[in-house]
Image 1 (cartoon, rainbow, N blue to C red):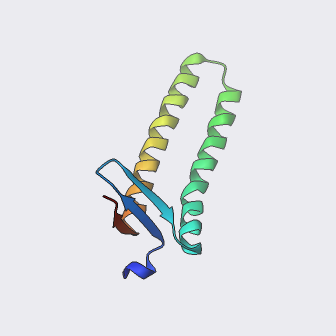
Image 2: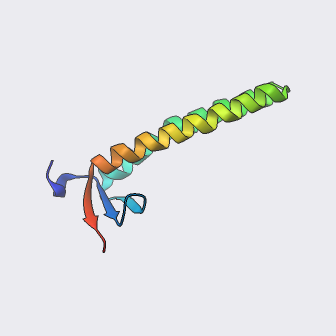
Length: 90
């Protein structure tokens, strides 16, 4: 994939210091498609919390939600980084 065709731009400073921004409409749509399942997951979580009064169920649901969100964000960042034009900022 040529750099002009990539939907994201990654301003890269170091291993942990980078910004990924959508470049064109395809980048914005990809971000939206990555975000929609996380919104659905949050809605399921909120329904589960409202239905159950047990603290153990709430704690387990919250821990599971945080772990799934962390994994989801890690996968999204890796995917976006692979599809982005890298610009080193020194």
